[in-house]
Image 1: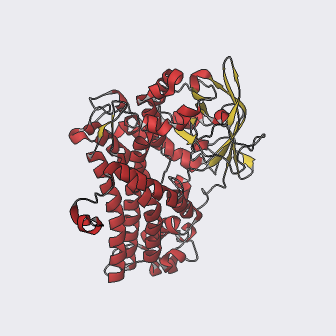
Image 2: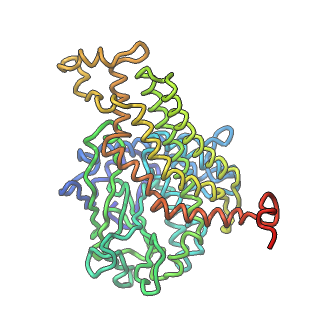
Image 3: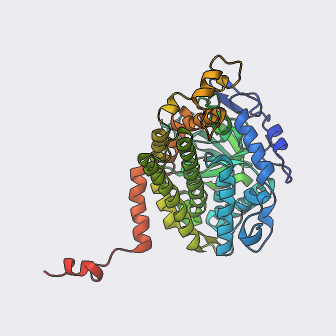
Length: 485
């Protein structure tokens, strides 16, 4: 997999994925190089989850059906084709809905905790392929990369933000084109924040912000294997030593440093063309594709938090108390609001400029704006309902009968309708979501998923205004207010 050809057998399995992680990729975690991502204690849990996801949902759904994917009865995706269906270009509204149900199936495996499950970047590559003409002379590269990634069930991630140091002359500077050669581009600099990068097969690069007139060297988009020579991933501290969720779902985040990395021409999508780089989102409708997946994941995640909070309330015996019921009702409202926005977006599916069908983007933008505020509130509700139980939850070492605390905890946490061991495990999960570093990272991730919340709220105002138009001052209840001298 260190080759830039990205050759991966099409009949991919989880075991093949794990064996490919020992490919020479340069991953630094906690001040050391990780020899094998599949077996290192900091990364093995997440790698194992991705292997199981591949085995459960890879399939070949992107190749069949009139809607560009495999469906069962009623338009539901076949269980073994959900990742492939993320690569589908829908030719009808039904195809858009089927793609949404595939996103939901994948998200429910993790309770929505994986912000970079493989179907997310699949949507971006698919949007690009559907509007490949936007890329000019590199249109064929985009289409080929989409087909290859779909057929190989690649796990992709991206790095699009610039490092704090900004533009500079050394490796600390923003990633830029150093020179063009006969066989490709040479790039140098850094990009962040690459969630899932140590576990990905390939890294996708494109600009996040609009580029100025003197920044043509930053107008670059390409894809390379994570094991490409000259590419190093500097990761944040691992959270895998924490609670039960952290051990399974710490997808990691990384700063990607390119030390004169050579990108072959067939993997280049934009090279020095500032106009195409700045028009990437509007020119490919990629936000509608990506927001569809992330909005589905958001409501699945809210439902998961509601289920945890509800079980904690039942286990503590406070489920019937009016204050607890009010909190659970609010959390249920958060989940239902986010779910309904996805339903509205899918119901408004339409044929886009590229000729393929996508969701109505306005409800999805609304979901993104609200989730940045509603998810942290959902965590507060879990904290309020779990209360002192989250502070006092037993550790796994207290579960075995040989533990000095076992007898005490078995009596203290047991209720008629829930055993002590189940109660203890439930509190550990709730604490992972609401107290520990894993949960804090999850909350911050959702808060800034689409950028600073206030800035995105202002952007949504423009999106809403463009979609709905200004309220007429010459009709309806405003007529009498605005009329007159």
